[in-house]
Amino acid sequence: MIPETALELPFKYSPFIHNFHQEKNLKAYYDEANQKFYLQFTPDKNVEGPPNHVHGGYLASILDESMGAIMFLSGYFGLTNHFEINYKKPVPLFRTHYICSEVLKVEKRKIYIEAKVFSEDKVYTISNAIFVQFDFNKLGLTPEYRVILRFHEIRKEGHNFKEAIELLKKEYQYS
Image (cartoon, rainbow, N blue to C red; front, side, top):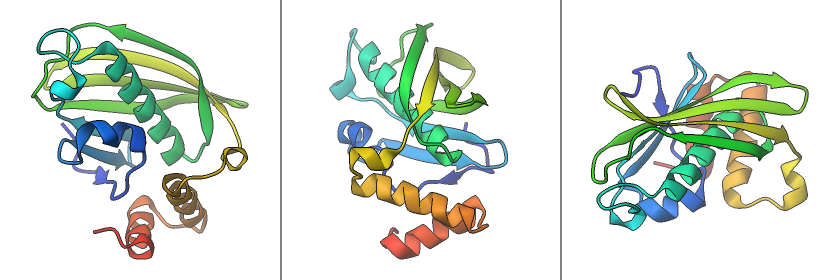
């Protein structure tokens, strides 16, 4: 489900989402060739809504985070301005699912992004959002956002995604 061209991210991009998953059930990837972010997750009882299925609020949160991730990985910094979600089918617990997010277009300060929750050949949920570019330095940066800023500095130096990740691993001593 994750393309072979996608590389796993070695850093936590979202403490909010990681708090639900205890690391073992969550993996993030970036496919530079196709400009897509992927999140692999296996939901457990901590995120249950309807019996044996994922809570819709959790899905909205993880989709928003995935759209924010592709925005950051694409070189933009912004905040969610408008968010829509279409729950097509209930998402079962204890199975591995994926989210794929991609930037559709950028118009001035607006970034249009789409994300889907899927597994195998089923699409469970689709979301669309508009992010508005914003200077994150105004908010006060946490260590996770400092890593993202450093990632962008490395990319602006001319390094590709894989090289940037390797440099981050060395600088921040990620395994």
